[in-house]
Image: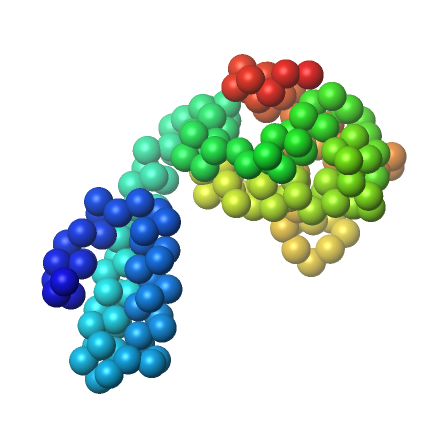
Length: 173
């Protein structure tokens, strides 16, 4: 297939197909013939433009949505994995618990719950709202997008409107 036809097909590809195309183009950009390297660079440029435009359109579409609508959209676009469902249910069922307690409720040890919950929030930040800066680390506090953290007791609680939205989405306590 010609480079132009591949580029024309980008909008109709799934996220997975575009990811595979990017990986193939990245490989050809360094390992291919001179012609393949030029084509690969063109495909990567087209993917970058498509993704930038998609993000712009998405931001425009969600800018006037409520937090609840944004949450539902984030989980519609990127459905929850089994791990996501586990960390959501752990917090819904155990408000006011520490990361260790939530990890145990999820069947894990240590601070695994916090890692997975934070990753889930990070992966959907674009659809939700920006994470605030951590008060204790030089980083963003992604878990704080959907939960409140009490520094005094080191406990997490799902924000009330978020808990209600998750329950509406079938995450029952």
